[in-house]
Amino acid sequence: MDILIGLLLCFLLLVITVQKGLFLGYALFLCWIIFAWIAKRKGKTMKEIITMSYEGGKRSFLILQIFLLIGCIMSVWITAGTLPTLMYYCLNYIAPNWFVLFSFLICALISFLIGSSFGAVSTMGIALITLARGGNIPLALMTGAIMSGVYFGDRGSPVSSAAALTATITKADHMTNVKNMGISSILPMLLSIFFYGGFSLFYPLKLANSPLPSTLKDSFVISPLMLLPALVLFLLPVLKVGVKTSMILSILSALLLSLFAQGANFFSVIKAMAIGVTFEEGPLAGVLSSGGIRSMLITYIMLFISCSLAGIFECIHAFDGLEKQIQKYNRSPKWRFGLTAIIGTLSSSFGCNQTIATIVTHDIMKPCYDETEQNQFALDISNSAIIISGLIPWCVASFVPISMLGVHNASYLPFAFYMYSLPILAFVLFPISGKAKIKN
Image (tube, rainbow, N blue to C red; front, side, top):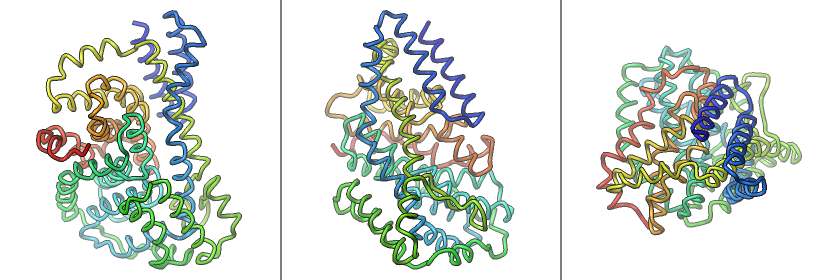
């Protein structure tokens, strides 16, 4: 009963925090205190609680470097003109009759390159929703297309922190999981193209020439050369170069472009990578921004607290009863995935955080996977908890990006086709895709 009350209290704390727009780290720390108190009531010493919290928090150490590199990339790609060039070319060549479809595909491309739903929304997403507002396209439809696109990369990019966390906690091979996610994305992507293509014909963009492309060209040197950092980040992992090495080389190439192509000051670029870059005034205000390493450190703090909280869950055996019940129904890999999806949905709803959802789903479902199924386990979590978090309106994974887009309700959900078709198809087609194509 203590655990159930604690979960409900945490749920309320997290929902209120998200709704009020407060820093989630405070609520997560209060959740840690609640469960530390519950652990104390169950006879655990403070030393045991702190030890288990630290053991849980250590899970996050392995991806700290990736978090820091992502923060650098988000900023230096702006100073190098990489993101502005991507935006310029995309916006210039969007056909009005296919605007919704192109928006989905462009957001998928950007998010895959930078590995971040928030990053893709804060750059390309804001630009596209601004055009849609003036072009008589329903905002719910446009938001659904953008959210589907950005979660394509947030889930499946080699530089996604969510993908790195999933591979780390399941002890799966990261690049193998990326390949498996790519395979399982093929059919949902094709169906999403038909879905958004159909809506594009019904809702074409009715807008005269947008000033944004010319504004980007006036503010940055726009050239195919500026796409070099993106090509480095995309091609090197394909050539079996390590993800961290690829990210570092992408940062270095972007740094050189910032200095010699864009004429930026060296120290200003380093400052941008450290604390971010934002256009607070002028025509690019609210269109291009990045929090740099500082924002990723804040995100990492939340990740560490979430992992520490999961450590306390283990300490008090919070989900042992649920694990035993689940194992009774673990009749086949297909139904096991179904259970993983259900647990992922519940943990996203109660945890209000993609990281908590991932960790809790892993901890509860871990007994259902043996040591030879790490890659399958990672894929199942990627096809459930990771993507479903973006469909829970009060979860940070959903609330933050739709707030950036200026859409403060759940009206986009019916149009987030890729996000809900992926777990559904993963379940329906599991006997085919799960057994024939998984690489171990």
